[in-house]
Length: 76
Ligand SMILES: [Zn+2]
Image 1 (cartoon, rainbow, N blue to C red):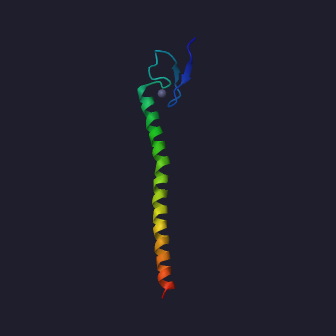
Image 2: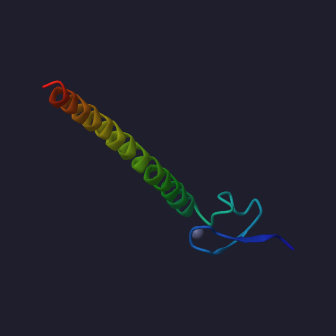
Image 3: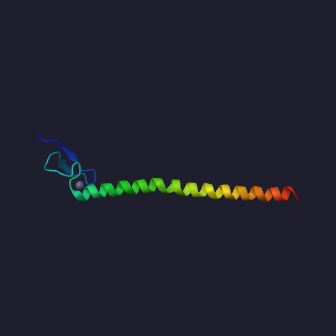
């Protein structure tokens, strides 16, 4: 009796054999959908890190500008 798995995309039963070249996916379409969601998830993870880096860089510049301004006030 062949092993049957569920397609990760559409949950269709997929026979784990040479009959299913895209296993564990039922079809090429479901394989591409899963790959697309995987890369989308990756983009979501990397995007906040990039913007956080930009924010902290802006904050550092703001703090440096504030400190420079305070120094000017201090030496007046
Ligand atoms: Zn499927």
